[in-house]
Length: 101
Image 1 (cartoon, rainbow, N blue to C red):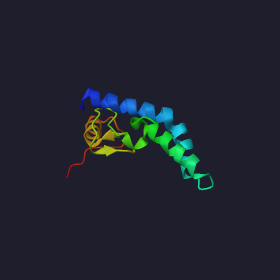
Image 2 (image 1 turned 180 degrees about the horizontal axis):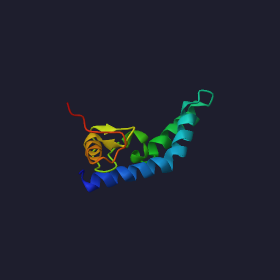
Image 3 (image 1 turned 90 degrees about the vertical axis):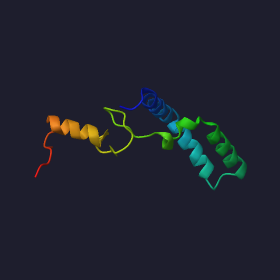
Image 4 (image 1 turned 120 degrees about the horizontal axis):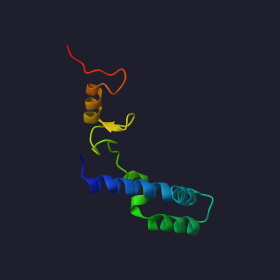
């Protein structure tokens, strides 16, 4: 199980990303628009830099829904390989059985 602080920090980052997504997208569009004057584009870049650092989507880390583990995470399932194996062994995932030969 991951530390509670790491899980909570990641939740907080997800909330900030959702909160500032529209503003960030608008400022990025303004900053990358070649038809606007250089001063307006520069001002948009300054405003973009002034946004909270944790509101950037690249700072969010994928974590297992059950354990909070950050490594060996399956995006499609939203959990780590260890949690997946435990659920499969208990028979809680339909169609998945532990292999043996």
